[in-house]
Length: 199
Image (cartoon, rainbow, N blue to C red; front, side, top):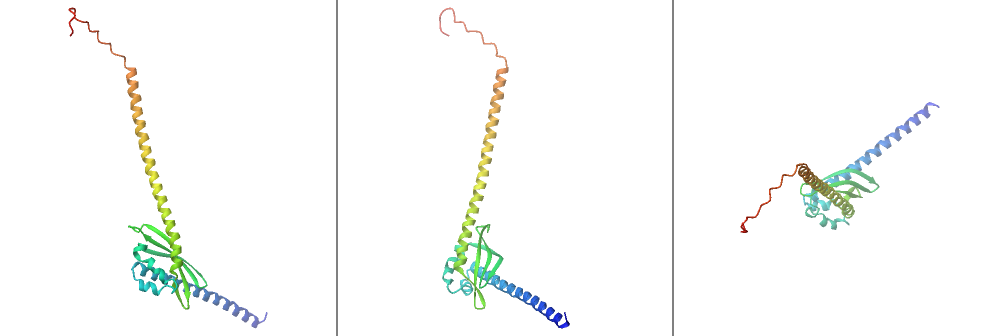
């Protein structure tokens, strides 16, 4: 290989590495933008700021915002996690914490659509994922309730069996005691008075 071949080879390797790094940065930037929009959207929903939430949604799905008022969602806080970007669609794993103490979790996917240069939340698809997540959360809560109920039932049955066992043991001990003690001599029979009068 001559010197020019080496230069061309190293230049092509350099360009390849640079393009891979730049595409990674662009993908990272896209992911970050989608996550920021999802975070702003849920902050607005929980703060009941529907004007801000509406500005972050797709035009077609804005009508579904009425179903996401804070009272109907009843979430105390939210968390976002893993994000998946495929072309013009992004999905951000989201968990809503609801219930009186925020201890009931509803997993869902915040679905975003790339519209021109901005990411917007598709409320309809997001709500679709929320319904399945809420059903899963309800089933989980029922399972916990049933498990706790069965544990309480098991404890109550165990306590009852132990009490019955104790009672039976006392009865057996008392019966043994009565059987081992010699009988006392019976009292002498009462003789009727000689004159025939009743006592």
